Length: 380
Image (cartoon, rainbow, N blue to C red; front, top):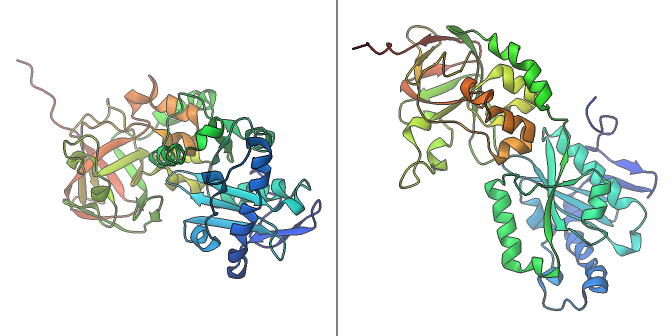
């Protein structure tokens, strides 16, 4: 059963502890949000002292500013007495702010908003909900820990956006009032190392010579996915409409897009197993999922994948590695990232492979994928 499957917050839901409805924000609610957030400043001053001129007491962003960001806002009450703002980052959902007016505090309303936010993020397909907070203030990290959040380990990779958020907090000097921490609540139970090890025979049974294209996914913008019925592969642009060229690469001297990394291709068997729901498969971020043995042994570099028949598109497997990262942890868990980057995963290319287009053409889910391997080196 999915977490929080019994309650859906897409409409108004009354929380018995507070007698306030938790619901999506409407336009008329937005002007009230900043004042609710600002009303919490005295609580911080009671512990930290006078905060005049401090970023913690700066005027809160307007509701309209929050609403303009990708994500959602939930509110409680009519008129509103509390809200939760969740942003959609490139790999997961992030709790940007949760505030309850002090006149309505200590009645379970914050917990109701938090659970509603977690459920709505789950229904949107996100595997985890993150936040940043103070480690030692009682209503910060300790409160979130009681509601299922766990502090990031020191060696947990951070995504680019997470690093930007931390840098902005440091610029504002928030750490001067205490240690700031990242926390995460898992919304979907992630596969464990034992799960992945037990699944290896299924992965190893994938076709070796003729596979099937299962999905084509375009990334028109950061954090955006479009599942295509027909994709167009192009020698210059890769998957037409995808942002491969705009994303650039750390592996080129000038930071431009790497020509050997036009496409990321992943085993459909593995992403299906990790995602546990078809709607979450696209979160992996790869443009094509194929039912095929992608291992180095089966697909040495410069193997060709002929898609959709003799006159169809052709992509070639390149030597560039495709590694799991902080985004992969956020979507599928730390065990999964460690496994795909480890001794079982690397030879099998479980995180996937990089490829480039050498013959353009349309590609569709269900297309046959025929392997043409490069000639074996001639012994001398």
